[in-house]
Image (cartoon, rainbow, N blue to C red):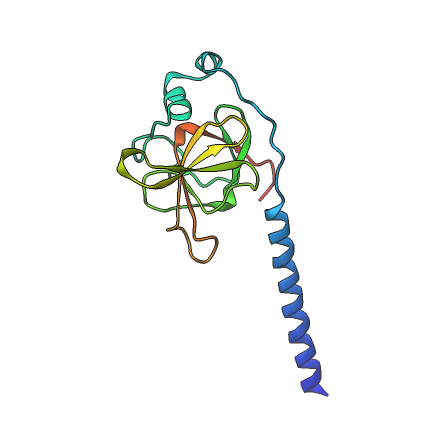
Length: 167
């Protein structure tokens, strides 16, 4: 009888853990509807700084280590610097040692993927789905224990909003 109770307890613990993980995955997979924020290039030039315009509209790249988000790990959300669309949650950010902010996942439905053959390379560009702003590129060398992806993002293309949740 004791063995049965022990086996039942273990089974219940495993079931609860699995259900909690499944629920977390379901929440993470919910696709966000984004509002179309497309503007003319003249309108973007009026709204963005010259550096933001270069990165977001002309597909530029920050220098490695440039800006404050590479080693930034506060709890919150990273938004598109052009249109304020929420793109990445802080719990998906990790230190990749590549010189740019890195995330293992984006908020579902907020990022678009496009084949990029510029500069003699074959890569996948990531852009904001709402405004087509260039964010960076995605690579398959991210953490294997999560998605295996590395969203390599220009600091200039994002801004951070700290979470109001108490830790």
